[in-house]
Length: 501
Image (cartoon, rainbow, N blue to C red; front, top):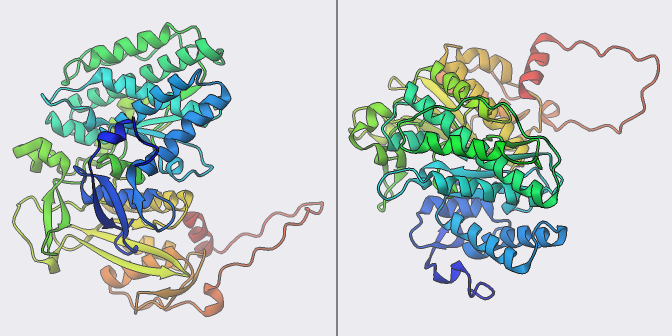
């Protein structure tokens, strides 16, 4: 690995495999750390631009060197020695799978950067939580985000992932009071460590914002030894700063391929998706395997990782919110896994708990996953559109989560079909679905497909060719005075457009 001599990469053994960003993508050669699994290879394929071979150290050095080079140019890193030390710490953090920036940084896109910390990766060999290491990693994340923001960003997006995996390691039920205390302490530790680093940056480069004089009170104790004391110490250190560089530092975000790379199974405060996940064994057969959270929970996994009551998610958010700088998004788990039946008995492939359809709508490839309950009724949906932009993927994920929550609360599928069938968007020919040849949008295809499968509906024909064509964008014209009120849309079309947006 030319150019990496003398760095931590020199001691990393690699193995070669082939992987695609999703099952439909063309596999590409991947060289990754030998101890990592094929799931991480797929994440690397999703993070690397282009379609050719990828060597993980070279891919990671791309963003690490951009950070250190930009930091030196902006005067945010004082010397070459400091730049080398920061780069080596980031390599170590990444190899331990403790933290990394979001996909937008790996792909060098001009989007607001984020940095995520994988909570279960801070579990030591004896099962304790490395609170000091976590606080240091949070400080590294703040430094990286400050540099990526040109030293001028008022708000940063430092977050954490897989709280459910951490709770499983200590066998804490997600819906319990002890779990909420852990969530509050983790959020307090994250914010305290982040603002303490913001204060250190303020000492070097000048304060831009005042320190908070009144803090919410963190939990006095938690089921994780040392966590409450570490959170209190971090908040006290932040409060002693002369000022801050940033108005806010901590914001949770939906997961992307980076969470999969780090081995996180859920985003932010989301509960576990279940104790088992579908996989393909060496013989190419579909099997169910324990999740990482289930392996940590041991014999307690079936009950511990069962879906919590709907109110548990809101209670968890309320516990952590006082220490976050922005409201967390709706929880979106990584594309894994429907929950398997509680009885760990093998089931035939024909009665699997999830079904996936793949199609191309006007050239945009998308996968629709439907997760069923034990009676074959639709329980959740999820989308995968790896070739779309981050904004489009986030909208699809948010809509899928909203629909899943609605189904969980008794909203009939027929209501969603009436809303999203024939929803406008980038429409055109559909490839890969013999029953639907044309659609007005990805949502149109998806909900007509669900209507066929779960409602037996045959009254939703393909739209006319002119209705499915992408809308023609007219050149903007200056408004004429006096301005007229916009025409009111028809109830059906207006409702569809609002939901599709």
